[in-house]
Amino acid sequence: MWGSRRDRDRTAVTCIACGESLPREDAREYDKEGDRWNRRDKDFEYLCKECFRDLSHQPRDDLEDLLVDVEATAGGDSQEAYVRAYQDEVRERYGDPEAEDTDRQRD
Image: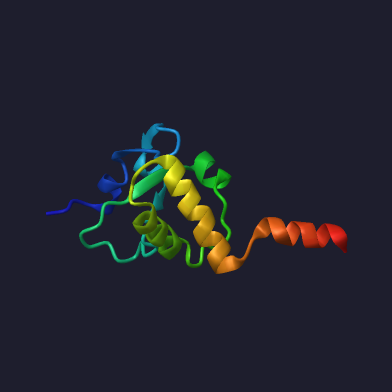
């Protein structure tokens, strides 16, 4: 049926960051939905260990929702429209970071 897990881990995968091909057992599995334990009907992506170490491991609360809202607002017109929509949405949700920097400089 599926074969042994040991045989599956020997298959080659490609790092989504650098494009390096490497054995599955030497890669880090990435699930953009954040639920790597629920494996049914999913296509996982992989990162080599070096690229995985270079990632920011900071919390990304609300990031996926923010990006979905931005995409709906930008309408897929252009990269510039997407960046403007992203900046507008961040200001609306979290305030203007440039204004906060100016306030800190005055203190």
